[in-house]
Image (cartoon, rainbow, N blue to C red; front, side, top):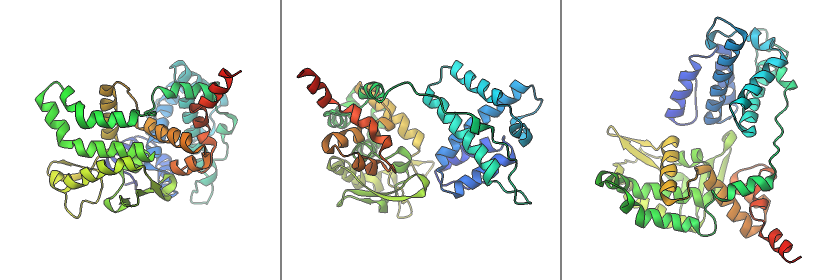
Amino acid sequence: GYAMTAGKTTYEKAKRILENLPDYIGDFFVSKSASGLSSLTLYEYLKEYKRFFTWLIDFQGLMITPKDLPSEVLENLPQKDIETYISSLRGLEMSTATINRTIASLRSLYRYLTEQFENKNLEPLFYRNVMKKIPLQDCSETLTARANNLKDKLYTDGLTGEFLDFLSESYADSLPTERDRRRFIQHKERDIALIALLLASGLRVGECRNLKLDDLNIREKTCTVNRKGSKKDVVHFAYFAVPYLENYLSIREERYQATDKDRYLFVTRFAEKVNPISVSTIEKKIAKYTKAFGVPTTPHKFRHTLASSLYKATKDQVLVATQLGHSDTRTTDLYTHVNNNEQREALDSL
């Protein structure tokens, strides 16, 4: 089988997709896994390739399945066919950012097949790379526009504390049935601790899900994580998460019947087994809780929340980039526009 570094759920999903794709996609997957690309990113790439191959077979009228798509079809693919595919995605009203992710995934595949792949003669699968002719789509939305769209989804200006208080004190009473209340209370300490840590650290969901007990240092308010590319990093988190983490750790062993062998920090129990909570479960819970709170958002917006609050407090983009695990500050430019009160005040004074 193909080795994956993330959770079993992602592994099984990727394995099912790989079974229906050509062997050269399996080679791509193994190579990129070995180079440190996260399995979640690779899973998203596989979905892109399945969608593209399915469209391409239909568009060219080929009587084959995606698994049987010869590499020669990719080698001899006309530029206009790729452009037609991109136009079809735009016709589905996909965002520019989504289309650019599709282009990036195909670029990565073509670069591998034409430069990094080695056959028995130590040569690439083929040499023609049509994706070099396909530019990323121009994103006409300015940083200011993106920031304005983002603001309503952030938990800044005291909203983080209000949300955690809501979960701690009010959410259970808002549930319609006693069964719903019991289910929430069963996982209350774990869910609130996890959410508090995301809000206090800016961790990605996958990074938080993969934390082990030994990775958490409450006294120093740090956690050790594996960033993208399998880079180890020590991430600081805000003090407000500490009591929620301590509450959870005090009940974790008894509530989930966890033993010394169960090293993941955030766990669940199913069929008499203790397992790490899944990324999809975290995403669904945050969607449900934030909707009930009245400000629906996503785990990634929690990351934006921390970055925005940190920039507002420090005005230091390098510090924000370091906190988020980014290698440069270009990705943090957005937060200078989220926090533009100074600009508004200057204009008001004219």
